[in-house]
Image 1 (tube, helix red, strand yellow):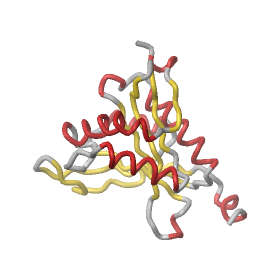
Image 2: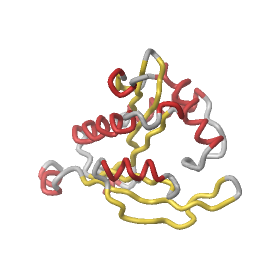
Image 3: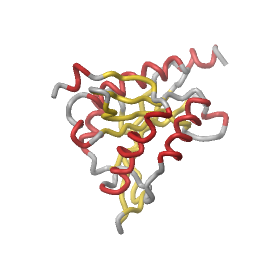
Image 4: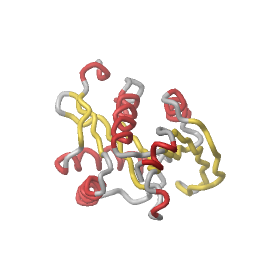
Amino acid sequence: MDLEQSVEIRDAEVSDAESIAEIYNREILQSHSNYESVPQTVAQRSEWIERLKNQNYPVLVAVHNGIVQGCAALTPFHPVSGYRHTATGSIYLREDARGKGLGKQLIQKLLELAGKRKIHTIIAGVNSENSRSIALMKKMGFQQVGHFKEIGFKNGKWHDDVCLQLILRDSSEIKSNL
């Protein structure tokens, strides 16, 4: 299956919430890439999609043959107004869709949309054991700017996160548009 060539990257709709919840919940239940401990309901994922879209943050899905293979979103970094040009990014893929270029396509589309939204920088927190995600983020231009020790607790143990950052815009361009 050649996903990279035949996938559609599009804005998520509330009708995608069930597929998004399935992908997200797999990570909650079977990995430590996400520190949630309780699976999300379809209603919670629907509210999440609507909330982010209402705040003008992109929520994307990667679709192949009518099946959602992955999702990605930018979310507010912090509620304080001085951080309004900073976002966090997250990407989740079905297990069988990994390593096929979808993560790269989702990141590229998020970066394009971040530029339109006047995002200056994107922060990504990645479990330090997730070497594939870290390598992908670095390949996409993100730089490691921190390593948080024992920041997440899941499955009876503490986990470290690597903090990655990509600065998208010239800071003088942001200041002139404020």
